[in-house]
Length: 329
Image 1 (cartoon, rainbow, N blue to C red):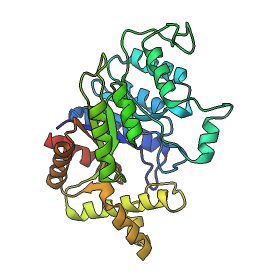
Image 2: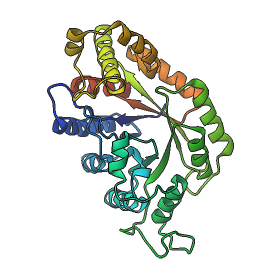
Image 3: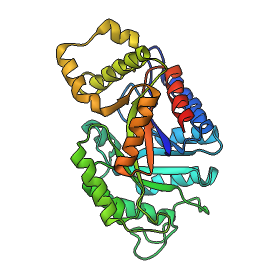
């Protein structure tokens, strides 16, 4: 089973963004040691408890401090940006570290005020498929007359390209990935079984090969919690669920809560009801239980790769989670 990592770069209680970013470098090095396939960083805006607002910046630090593992974005929300600027940023990354750069692309909207701030000065929103076509043009150094910006090249001119992936939350996105022959990334968290099934079926049925991807390639992503004993697993799981509740239903927290914080705070009956509904958003248990569930997911979806989100409290617990999974490979 091919395993990869998607990191939100959490900021823990009594820690700061510098601590979070430094630890992400250490975690990427550990993932490389255990031969994980790739290490990606998410893009989140106005989520105070994570430090991943600019994944392309974090990527350079990770690339500079690792030697072989692929480093990527999970993902760049393309509608917020100029395709030209994204192409230049990732060409710089690729020029510095050839054949190790992954560009995961998505289009999920953010908070309304974030959308406005990121799109300040734009008179209109460019169609997503048009942006993807532009991106391909820039990476291929294509100056054909079909290009919207004729004779325009994204610099630097390089000999290789970043690996492109499309993040999908709908059949429409899955169909775009299939049409362009791109690998598909689907998050299992918070999506219905029927919706996931429909995305995968649509992608496989309509897939069209391109120069780099000859067959459908599917990555499924999920939160994972595991540790050495049940007590720690339960404590980490409660902390995760409080973090999830607070970012989705309550005021944005400025840190990822510790198990001690959760124990002292407790949960209301209403919060416990919401936690029960959120339980399917994370795989938790002993390492043998977790690995068995991941294997089931891989077989059930016929996935080429499983992307794990080690979003648990504490540097030592994140490292242990990666180590336990790595030792099972």
